[in-house]
Image (cartoon, rainbow, N blue to C red):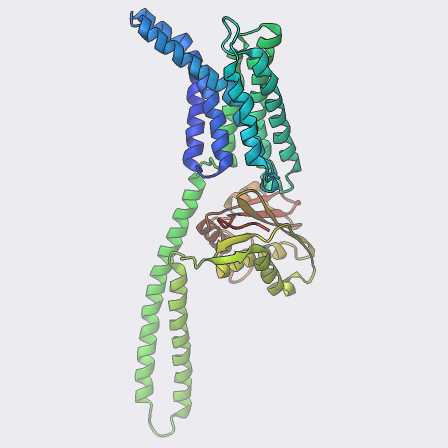
Length: 456
């Protein structure tokens, strides 16, 4: 049980450190902590007390302290686990944002738990099983239903995958605990089956670790790849700045010598020569001005935020790209307005890049679906094409700077998606790509909602 205690509390702490503000994260961390208290109760009884007794340290006062501590930890697990689970599934459901009664229901669901302390358990029992089972079993069953119903109800394929992984992690442990902690002791007198919970919890921890590395789990995500991307983008910024400096110096020389030649050429009837040189001077000035503009763009991006609606930005972007979609069927599915604080110009550029890539992936025509959906705290923009798709290697490299699948095209340097990734990250969002050869490509961009605003 020491493994259960350490594993559950470690996951709970990591979740809180990663995303402490999100209610669903706090509730699922609470599940981990309450389950961990059950492990601590077992560790006290099976390991700590025998250890203290073997060394003669288990005096009567110490024994009373350890007994009270064990009882408190046991009660936190028995009573807290079903309550935190049902509250998590309520908050995590896709419809939670439109349920106005969730907070009131949370207080109502707390009442049976508090009443449990008014009942005296049978001699030798840790809790009054008959009464506690009366409310804990419906809580867990309802939570399992909400968890699975939410996963199947989710229409966004990217979010559905995360919900499925969450269900895979939580459902087996809670379903097994339903029997080992409540049903078997109450109706069959089997009190020691809770010890088998460790095996199921081990499976849960394995699912969470795998999901965290591969996809991200409830905000807990190993960011090695993101750090690599950030480092590479900084390298691009540094290299571009050096290149700008070198070109600027050479252009400055060209401008200087052009002015010198012009001064020396101002003789009778040198109009043709002067005219040609003025063209060179104008061109060099233009390059000079452009370098300053480009240099400004290669520095760390500073967002100029304002209140915008993603639906309006998508409409504006798709309207400007209408000539690109001459042989593409465009499907718009806006389920909310998408009110956020964002840099309007930068996001239009992001959406333009992604939509253009989708159109170019369907040279013979196809279908582009642009979908805007919302969860309780996020807004999700999905652009899905029916093009040739990409294999796993191409998907992994899609955000890498200078990588491109369109190498045959001129002036394509493979920086578009790297730029998009950086801008979405600047907005505290996430960007991901899902694609398979022959099945098209889906690009997902998740943004946090505007605080104090609404999504629709």
